Image (cartoon, rainbow, N blue to C red):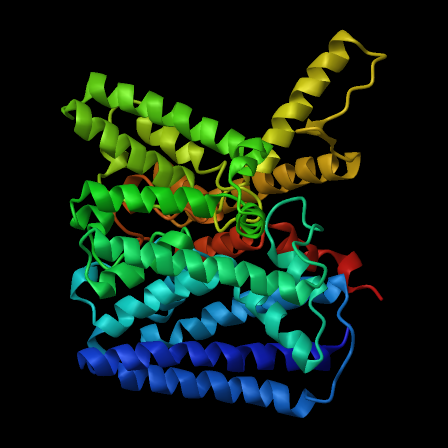
Length: 482
């Protein structure tokens, strides 16, 4: 492991990230909100730091290994979140405290969507745009963007790519070359974003809201340019468009690649993971709709409309809202919140544990039941017609064990800061699953939580975005042994 090599790559990536400050500067100048200076200063600090890391080590060249990829991914997302918070701390009357700025930055980049800000409608346009852009960049992953560019600069990409793509089945590539794979993912991502923005505009949004919400919709982020989120527009058409693109983004992008290359859609219904997600959402929508009809004042159509939107939004870990589901009757708030633990498909922009892991856990549970009945029989765990290797099956259980252990530790940590049990449980779950909305005292926003609790939740966001093991492996003695 070469420290100079890692500094070179981090410096290069930071200089690349500094370019993302340019669009908010242009937005600030366009709307004359006076925020452009804050972004210029942030750009200067970011590019200068990147240059200081890169220039002394620019001749350090070495092929990346998987171990290096883990360290670079974790370090870069941490550094990125810190530097991404700079504009939020430098915007005069709208400036956030360092803790809140870091929280908001990490929430955006990890596509969590939890916010500490109130009065979002009153924020300068440049800040509103920047929050949405953070989610868009984090949605597919800046590391994947770097994989498409860095090979031309002499840095290999496979180690980074394998640590960034979510889900347990990480070794499949859409194209023979990793660079072409990353580019294909970004072409699809950009096309979905543009299509979503145009659809929002056709449904009645102005261009600024349409662009901002297309960023956070395709990224399954949840940030909005209004305090009332999607509910601000009070439009069934906008809610339908949002739901459709959330569902599309929750599917594996490898399925979208096949649809684009082969011009067919049947494979979406043939894929076990996509099929499970559709059935899961359909069942949850049915339960929610019937419950709202029986226990609330919603009319028939309104209840169905709210149920469809909130189920898809929460279950895919977006967190947009048209109603405060935490006030819904009975067990509905808890049921919807737990649905976010499932999340999106592997290879999607969604959070959660990923659908494929839930399928494998269920199938392995059934296999153990069958072994009790037939002790001498051999049962294979299959996804569709493909048998899953025992190594992957064991990795899923390992992930689940680490997930539960870390969830418990962070839950205790947040409660130790004085937060009540419901709020602590839901905020840890919302950040670890990259969902955003929580229950209890954080149902509206996270601004009133203690500073220490916010830092714990920032760690939860990072763990959720990098799928736990990428971060946890750095704290094992074996990782640092030569």
